Each structure stands twice: as C-alpha cells, then as structure tokens.
Length: 238
Image (cartoon, rainbow, N blue to C red):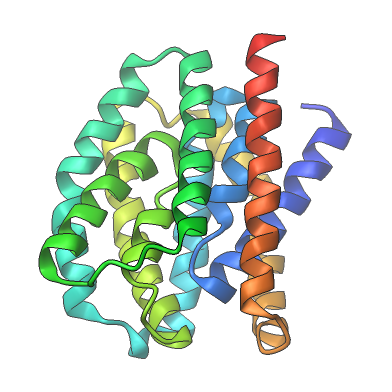
C-alpha cells in the first residue's frame, strides 16, 4: 500500500470512528469499501478489530445508558449469523467478497434512506441481530440492521446499546474468522498502524457531537459510503 493510499485510509478510519461514536455506526460503512479497494485481504478483520476498540471506548464513556436486554436478544440472533458470515469469508474469492462489501453498503444505505421504522420487539431485534451477524462477519458492515431497529432510542441510549452489541458481536466474529484462518499478520499490522486514527476519531467525537446536525451527518456518511462502494465495484470490472 502506497503512502497516499495509507493516508486516505487513515483519514477514512478517523472519520468513520468519529461517526461510530457520534451516531452509533459508520466505521464499517465508510472504511470497509476503502480497505477492500486498496487491499481486499484486510477485509473484514481490520475493521472488526478497530471497531472493537472504538465500541469499547464508547461503553466506557456511556455504557450506563445501554439497553442490556435488547442488546442481549440481538446477540442471541447474531450467533448463527456469525457462523454464516465466517463461512462466506472462507468460501468466497477476494473479488466476490469485495463485491459483497459494495452490495452490503448500497443495501444498507437504501434501507436507511427509506425511513422504515420497525417495532423494536423481540422478534425484530433477533432478526436484525442475525442479519447483522452475517453482514458484520463477512464484510464488517453490521450497523444498518441494528440502526434501523433501534432508531427510536435516544442519542446516548442508541450509542451505548449499539456499542455494547458491537463490542461483544465483533469479538464473536473475530473468533469465528480466526478459526477459518482469516486473521493473519498483515491484518494485525495494519490494525496497529490505524489504531491512532481510530483514537483521533473517538477523541474528536465528544467535543464535536453536540455541534453536529445528526440528520446531515448521517446523510453525508451515506453519500461517502455510496461513493466508496461505487469505486469498489468499478475497480472489480476494470
């Protein structure tokens, strides 16, 4: 990876981490297509490792607001999803995995823009956890299903509940991926190199979150995600 490519990835991770803290998701949505464009072998492990650190920081800051019961049911649903996602990573070639990342980004944006608001009952939370497990383990983008089902929650409760779910869920996904051999030395090295970017995002999020217009911030994140996914798709056919 060249220096300009790494600089782009560093900035993307910082912005994605800021969004993850401010609105509950965003790191995978932004960083996964960029990583898959630059080096598909780093997908999805690097984002999952970074997300574990970012969500751990949010839980340390706002964990008292989490809906433990709701997150628990979502994690029950995530277990079979993790197994399905790990199987996809083990079976799909790099090109098809990159296209899957792009498809998940575009589908997540489409669902978010439709404004569908399901009732956050046990069945819908379980289903969202299942879908998030497949998507998150295979592509590191598991935020949209949970953001959709929990969108009625208030700011601190949304952030802490999402973070608690992703902290445990990402660890589950990483264990499954390690069992398939997807965690390798390059992914660990790039995680260490990008950890300062994630830390910068977390540190900037708290002073900036009160000044951010959440609606415009989400819209900007969606535009950036679509642009990254589009570039990723084009790259696979050039």
